[in-house]
Length: 124
Image (cartoon, rainbow, N blue to C red; front, side):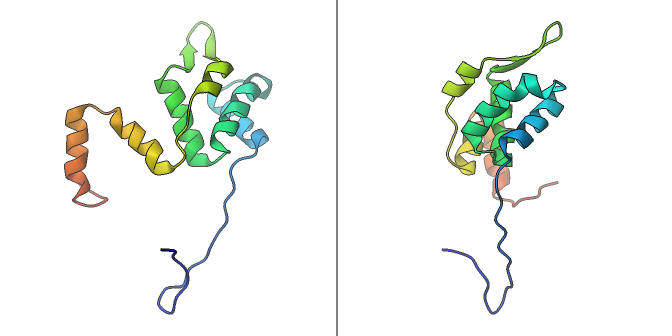
């Protein structure tokens, strides 16, 4: 079912686009404290995989860190292999991306999340 304006609720539709490659490269460059020329290849492959959609970008970069496809070494700094990252699959939806993340939680934590989820979006 699509949601839209009705007699009871006024709504505004806003079209959002993903980051352009240059903007994404600037963000990655700032986050990794590296010059843009060094992060360009990483930004390009991340853009290709995520279409620059901010939530996908953040989750994809987090997955790269978790899977050690983006690594930091105190001696050499940040490193990545564009070819390995290019082979990595990305989920087509936010729900699938977050479900994949939940699957990585320990069983007891996942059980607690399931129980807490029936209590609503805020639990003290």
